[in-house]
Length: 399
View (cartoon, rainbow, N blue to C red):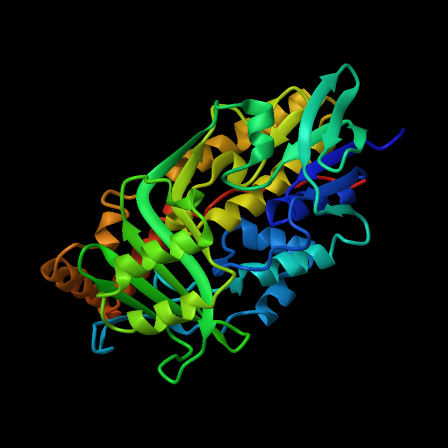
């Protein structure tokens, strides 16, 4: 029997993970990526729960551990750089997770394990889709037209491919927070600890160590949607300069480094809410389908887990409609649970006044105390099913 041909749009995390498993199950897979090469920017990401188990099954856990950023935890500091609270790695559900890796390093690992078996088309994208009785006719930006049995959208929260398939049906829901990430030169004040600084007027600066001798910085601030993500890079830098010029701490250093930066990411933190994840011979996975927002700390884990489930169900069901339906039924309840943000998020972490910042740091100091940690571990051992990364992983037979 001729293997099914699957086209995946997006070469970040969900796409290559899906391709890895589809290849294992005997599918012929192609990945198309709009960028000219792998997108290697971004901050730390973590892999936990069932996604960690999938990394083990893929044989990449050791490589992920070897690429660990080396971050020891998070220090919450004041304008004089005095620590107000600390959350060491692994001692809290907040802060640094067990498996912390730069997003770009994870992308490189996934590419390494798929590039010899999966066709990659860089510098190209899907411009039109036409479904017929036996497949999908795909028109690419470079003019080529090819037929595939299935098309899977895995190209992020603002996916163009998703719009071709579903139109305006999926909703991108902002949570009231803008964030910018970029890389800056390392300074003597930087260490293996991440540092979190709250400024008044609901502004936050975070600096995190990486394993490349530089520092990953971020600005975030509360705001209703203003389409800042649609502006040019120069305009975005101007907005951040206006927002943070009087923030104190190391704001001037970060802003100065930002001016020379070219890898900056600036977007409204949002969730994707989609009533369905498939239509005909097309489906979607990862952030394009159900981005939970970085506030959950589960974006990468959902992408890895969703890709594993979608590939597994396609291997299990000859009928793609049944496979898509089973994927939705298995995963949607879990996704819905992850997407429910705790009350007060993101405002709790972005207090407006000095009093609010004092209260936040006091609460974090309490959370980081040894007594509270011990109590938390007791309750966790009593009710492990309440953890947000708990998912019973189905097993699939490879061909």
